Image 1 (cartoon, rainbow, N blue to C red):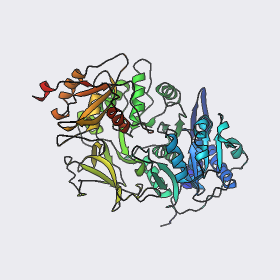
Image 2 (cartoon, one colour):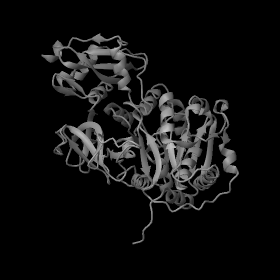
Image 3 (cartoon, one colour):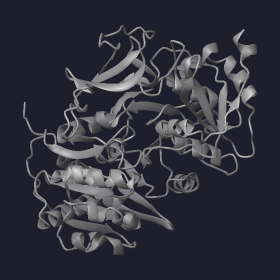
Image 4 (cartoon, rainbow, N blue to C red):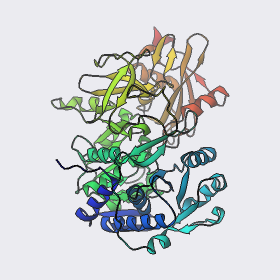
Length: 539
């Protein structure tokens, strides 16, 4: 059989010529910008030429500090195809973390959206390896020193680029973890891993994207390559709807109404915001054939609410920065009764083709796939990292497997159920309490908008759960009533006696509850904690 490397340039060319009339729609404050795949690919060629003239060579890192928009997609395609490495910079990182990842990756050029220029200007002088800053669109770039205009650079070049025949194992892109435990860590994705992962996204057992779809890409392009949806779009011919900076419920619902997407991907907090907005506004989600949600545990109440309120089927998935990210998707197995459908969809998901998953105990012994034994998940596959950039990290990577830090069960059908992170599980009186399962049940209580659970010190039991609740608008749930609600849903020793109410829960740069910060605030005594007498429930 004929051979040939699996390269990003192959994805670019395929979308450019086979699906040249598919479109990329970028939201703006007043209206939308549109470009065909052919035009986007041609501009990616021009961008590559411009970067080459600036001295960007093979393996040089090109950072992007931008929203989900057309120009970011052009960089997604053009930078790796020319042999350089795309480094997506998380716009929500702290000042110190942002400066660290730019320097650690040794970015040579950074492409900055004009609206984000003041934010990047705060770290510009600390970025020692950055030779050029390219600004997309308008914005106050006065703090960046000498800058180059993205549009002018691209316009100065003619379309067409003789893409090099690269080694498919060469680095194509890199992304850093969110840095919730120590410094962010770099993960490098090869052309081969990205190509295979993107191809899997089109499979019927994957997200199942086709040219008949319009995909609303809510997951930020600075977070794990937006779950490779930009590449899946070019591979499949699906139109791509980019929300740019407009990630709140109100503008998202406007975009959905105007653009009629059929698929979307986003974290639970986004979809929870949309659901809350729909309580007081008319929201039409009838164009969707399915929603995909991941990045954090998905409460059953959220899945049920979208089914009942909008008639939209929501499928959850699981993965990590280190896994590109998708490793499992929550499609129920064949042959189940209709009333069992939701039970299967609340599971973390079934391992996708190409990935292997196992669970191990704390001595590293492989546990049975019986859906009962609890252990730490380990994964391996063609789009799973083998090390961190410049850091071997043998404690996370061993014998070809990645230790995920997630605890749970695995059954014989390949369905995984994550119960917690190893660092978040609550160890109470010799028993484990799953903070994730407990907060998902709390969020099923009427009047709760969001809830996060952390472990706090306890003189008798070592640790006990503290529940931080964000009430729904105009509601103030009673802790005793919520305990009674939970008593029918969780083991007795899980019932939390400590409750606090907050206006907002802190979140990480990728939208997860920031439990590290919650624990710090609890230790400082920052919360007004209410105690509930559990004696009537414990018997």
